[in-house]
Image 1: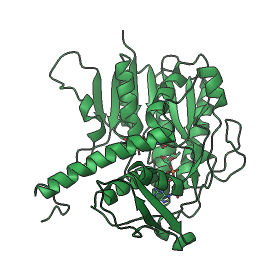
Image 2 (image 1 turned 180 degrees about the horizontal axis):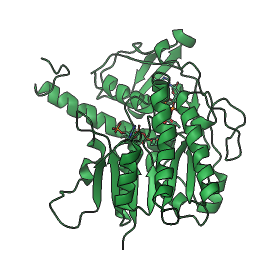
Image 3 (image 1 turned 30 degrees about the vertical axis):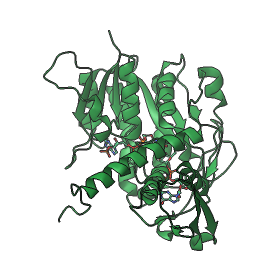
Image 4 (image 1 turned 60 degrees about the vertical axis):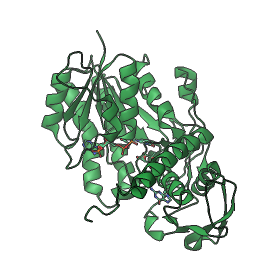
Length: 371
Ligand code: NDP
Ligand code: GDR
């Protein structure tokens, strides 16, 4: 009998990679997706199975983290061996705009999952993975950050995730449930959401290289992040639920990089060199060299400026994780380093932008839907 997994947030970056991973392992995978006025299953369409044919092992169910009755009914029907709770309003800056909703979906949503399992008497059957985050560390208390570093959340998102972290620990201790927090540091990929900084950068660099865009704007260029590849990190989510004991785990690469350096690395990947001038809100970046004959770029051209609208009311300046525990007890290793990640993302975005350019040149694509 194959194991059954239920993934909330299946349409997101991690949900898509985790579904692929579990299907390859022979799992029957059930995903929670939200109703939306447009198709929102781009990342998982390649796994879609026609419900009219036999031997289906990938199922999608409508639902929402704010709807207890829906979650209870689905968990009752699915009877999962493993739940991966990945659904969340996951954008830190946006959480300042919609704090109450973020608390409801990210904080109380986790409680709804844990309590559904308890209410249905599945405590001894169902293992639960909670998508915790390095944002819990917030204001720097200690570096590198490990499972014992104190939390100091700096956004409504991080505060909601802190509730989710502790309610997971509490249900484990109070009801002897197998429930774990994976405290994952930032992880990116070619299917990273377009408004997170790495993907915003690789998309803009690709468009600038191809002559589709002149410049782009970012916020805090000094923040430092410990970036890994999402493919490595979803493997760890699964490993966490296969451990003998339910525990909490930091997953990170142990290296940190400034946003500014990620910009340089992305341009370097397509043979373009940059120089940054100015400070704070006045900082700008200019092209100093183009080593790639495919791209005709003007030397000295300004391609990046800082826009204060992307600053956050409270910022997390430095994240660098210590994943020693996961390395020693679970055998955690990353297959991708930051260079591989940048290469993977740039390769994919250049291809995507070339497709857009081709369609637009052929008159098949316009950016204005009302034309
Ligand atoms: P994404 O933003 O790519 O995906 C979030 C998913 O949650 C989407 O499927 C989204 O649906 C769904 N979702 C949002 N709100 C609700 C809701 N109210 N009800 C049901 N579904 C909802 O995030 P990632 O894949 O990057 O991250 C996965 C999880 O891991 C998140 O919880 C995130 O906070 C956490 N995390 C992520 C890290 C990272 O670096 N990526 C690091 C540490 C933690 P839709 O597609 O419809 O928007
Ligand atoms: P983060 O990721 O907040 O770490 O949360 P994000 O990529 O949004 O920001 C990283 C850093 O870059 C700075 N920054 C900008 N960020 C965005 N989005 N857009 C900009 O234009 C920009 N300019 C500079 C930010 O200020 C920040 O310092 C991600 C999410 O996936 C969370 O869900 C997850 O929990 C954490 O990673 C770990």
